[in-house]
Image (cartoon, rainbow, N blue to C red; front, side, top):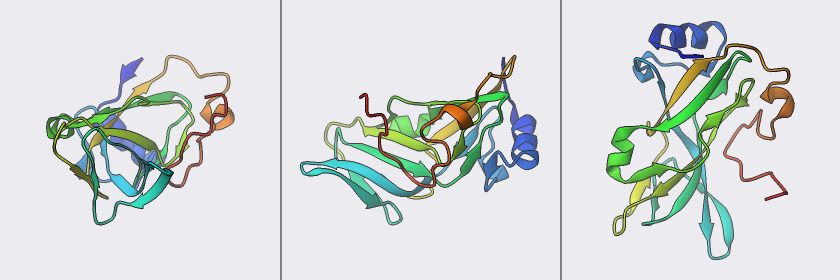
Length: 167
């Protein structure tokens, strides 16, 4: 298993429509920056609610938010991916919390989890921000059943809350 590099990511994005829309400006030596989408889900005292990120949304210190990404992702069956927080976002005070793995066969808009790690300052999250990068790795073998057959979140068109009733 090896990490895909810039020209391999470019070829995958163009030939397999793995990242749509694709922009050369978001390509790194061994990853691809993803942009924050238009919707988020936050926790309030009355439960979770959807918020619009188009004009920016301030996340309170210690606050948590789910967001979608602008890009439609289509991971081939012979590739896995990992979402990693960019160091610039970490230096601002963000943490990409928890689930960063993307299974082979995933298709749709990824949902990301962020936490404002600062103690006193609100952080603004806005559509188009490049807070995470997608790292892609080739698999040594094909899975018997990829995520398109086994996953709960494949085909997502916007940010999605938890679908696992066992949690």
